[in-house]
Length: 332
Image (cartoon, one colour):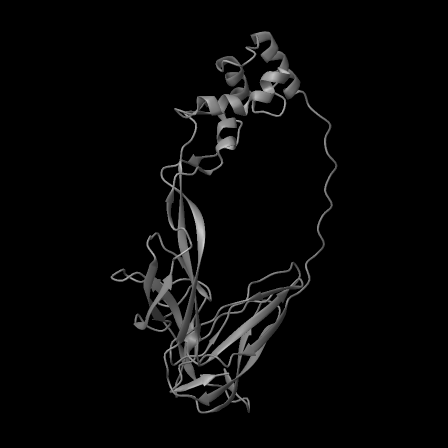
């Protein structure tokens, strides 16, 4: 860290155990005065340097806006084969489906990136979530969902209540439905012995094999079990089975070799100051032409820089998230 005239900023690195795994905390020896500074992070082949500006600003809690959508997930214990064909893909299904609300909450304000956020039901212990905006699904029913929001400090164990919000669930159809979820057909096609109660579905899945009197396109153990066990099966002889297995085991024509990928290009780093959070800045790392953004955040007296990911075979750039503890100031 250095001032605009190149003077180094004295300070120390704090225990980052309470921060996100991709962050570390730097505390200046003296509170930074308003002005322009820069932070540099050394990579393997180069060093990324980014400017930021410290300005005076009054503390205020982040503001929030929430919306809700419906998502469908399996409900109940997964159902699988009583005996699985070792050569088939293992799959499962459930007899019920849950439609549940998924809440998306956006936070704004000059201190928005100084926290990690949590959405929690009333009386539920909050746990910080990853990403911005914050998203969480709730296994609830009814016409309305109310939840509380919390901000987790990057420097300490402190948790700040940010308020409560409610969203309407009318028209989303939330609740548990008597509808199959998962992949029933794929599950049954891998069964030597199907789940209890699904024998007729199992036989129907192998109908084409009964008609063609062949297991071409099917897993052999499951297919021959169905052809012999199902009422509509063609009951192949042992000789027919041996002949099909021998044909399947015969070596085919090998495919052509693939073309090797090109050498990756070096990454280009760029750091932009964020005016929406005290000390907030986002590091954009362009690796092989793809843009990758970190979501930096810190506590109410810090400055953070997001961490880019490494990429490319010939050159890559390591970027760490930073925190400067400021006194009633923010970076932009």
